[in-house]
View 1: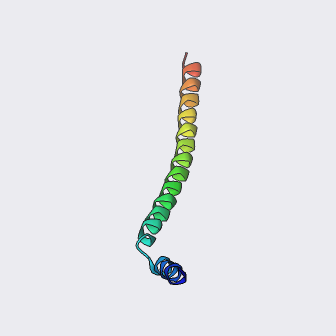
View 2 (view 1 turned 45 degrees about the vertical axis):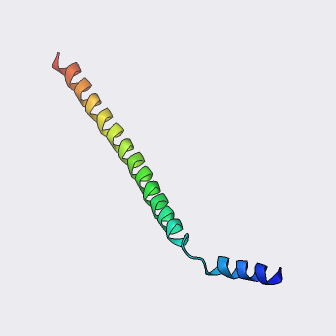
View 3 (view 1 turned 60 degrees about the vertical axis):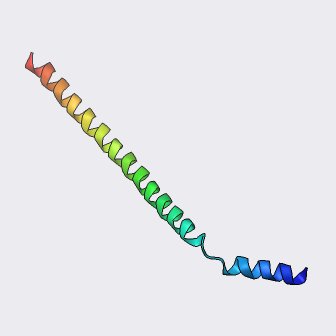
Length: 65
């Protein structure tokens, strides 16, 4: 029984097939987080630009009459 447990333990320690999957998952998570941050900042900038344009058009319409 002791040999079996030692063999299982050594196999688990030496096993590295799942390591690539974990690394790829971490890369995907980092890229996803970067995309979420970028889209959030971009949407804030677009909303600000849209607000500026609508305010400019409103002021042109108010002074143009």
